[in-house]
Amino acid sequence: MAIRSRADYEHALQAVGICLSARIPALLWGNPGEGKTAVIESASLYGWHVETLIISHYEPSDFAGLPVVTPDGSVDLAPPGWAKRLAPVAGPAIAFFDEFSTASPALQAAALRPLTHYEVGSLKLPETVSFLAAANPADVAAAGWELAAPTASRFVHLEWSLPLEVYAEGLVTGAWPALPVYEPPTHLERLTAEEMVLVSGFLRARESQLSAIPKDAASRGRAFPTPRTWDYAARLSAFAQAIAAPQDVRRLLVAGCVGEAVAHEFLSWVSALDLPDPEDLLAAPELAMFSGMRPDRVYVTLQGVLAAVARECTPERWADAIRLCAKAGEQVGLDPAVPVVRALLRGGVRPSAAPVPPEIKVFAPALALAGLLPRP
Image 1 (cartoon, rainbow, N blue to C red):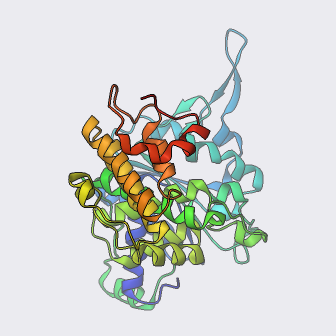
Image 2 (cartoon, rainbow, N blue to C red):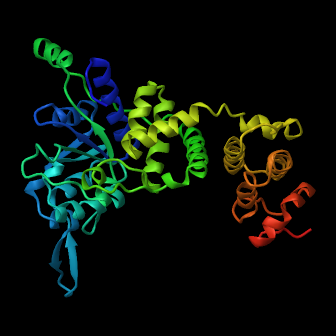
Image 3 (tube, rainbow, N blue to C red):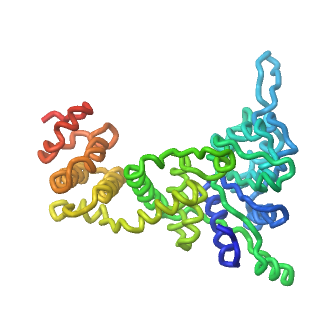
């Protein structure tokens, strides 16, 4: 989405701050000279350590580690200076890869391991480090390269520009909007679990969108759906809701993970669900009614029940979840309920010695095929 007003600018700024606070790598795309670097480095105002790398000035060994022969004759991968400066930082820190689109494919490939594994040579970076990057579109970058799909799928892609309203005010007052950062909210874990349920339900209805790598090189260098980017989308959407961010910020984040078209489809599908609270269902399973519900709504509702039981698993809640699945199977069909019953019966979810309610017999054929048929 083009940034045309101060509100658009503040929404984009908040989206970057959420990525930073959630420790999910983000990449800002924008024309040269529009303040991308200044915005990211403004996190230092909040006490964050920012390590800026003009990535085209480096070599692949500056990310993979420089081979060094040790006294015992083995080879070690010595970490570069930027990583050694980040490692001892006690508080939150940012590794900022500037001019990312000027990096050669070999350099981009070398940067992948730090992004997802926090490893630079033999050095393990602390999890308090966040990765951000900035890039110019390939057609305006100095010796620019399109991003390879494996690299692009490790970032949240956010469009960036500086609207006249913000620029004119900043020129006169000297005050520029700073990048907001957040402490993880106390209820973030619960909201994240709920978002994971929604993603699971959507992908059951639209399986083709689990992984859809674009055909052309330019689109492969931006956001597209993969299992990794769906995980990013769920976590960032939950964070946005946890801090009561505007809906436009949530949309920017989801689109930055899976692409504009898929994000629109997903958020439209979510807005039409109107699901019951899983805790209400577990509190009174005998009152639950599934008749008339679409199968995808039934599936997401039961996935929510599964997530609630996984958070607080007692024999009674586990048995009630089985009863809810059985009731759904009887009222709307087995298909939406079978995956949840299978998950409830697998090791790690079912409490030890929890009795199996007799209602489970409706799933006997499906459970027998999966080798999960419980003994009487």
